[in-house]
View (cartoon, rainbow, N blue to C red):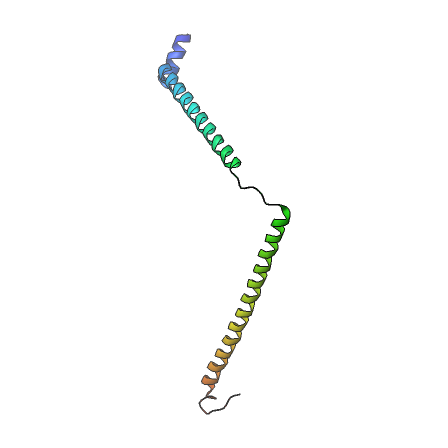
Length: 110
């Protein structure tokens, strides 16, 4: 009975030899992955060892303040420039409206 069931399973699914080969292939893959993980762990350790030293907190604070001051200056200049652009756009549209109404053609300005 056992032989009949085993033969039925083997014929229906996979042979024992093929199953053993699949297990060997899987074992080889696991070993290959293990070697790759060990190599990657070595690279990570090397990168951590080569990491740039962290500057003291006081030096970082000074650099951060300088960067914040520069960002504020640039933001203020950008806002002023945008304000001038919007004012010029208003003037352009006023001139277009005057041209449409004919005020500039007659030499009058409202």
